[in-house]
Image (cartoon, rainbow, N blue to C red; front, side, top):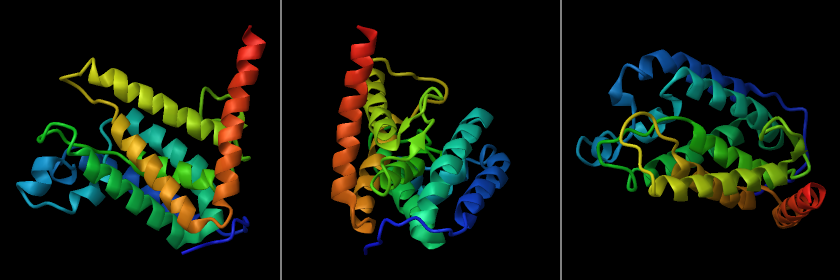
Length: 220
């Protein structure tokens, strides 16, 4: 499967569909544990469909609004390259894989919810189409998407390592592992879908290195 990395004037219906679905399901899912995904829900109760339904469930209003914002920013951009069906494919596949693999790390009865893993997949896939796209992902500071994507990857890797040494037993935790898995899936899908993925991955890495070298030089 391969698509040429040429942006078109396609609509963004899939992005809006996913945003509306998250909003509509939020009040239902937050009161219904049957929609959340966990090791026990799949392997003890046989609720395999929760790897999909959990993508539209969010643990708080802030969690929902944050994911809607990032879905709006990156979903529209990717949809213009790969179309309605392509974006839905990337969202569902990336989200389901990150959700499923995450449950082997977290406690068996701990529910995993949210579209973050799927959005990480969208971000990584979009990077392999257009690493030069300006992003306000981090601290509302404009930077090329390649820089933002790899910074996001580094932040989640650091968060995952720190969380392992400071485990929270109560409240909602950030699913750093799900974000990392989603990003890796996005790289794989980007390789499948973008004919220019090698060049764009190279430029993304160079962007990341040069950006922070310049920041260090400015600060010191």
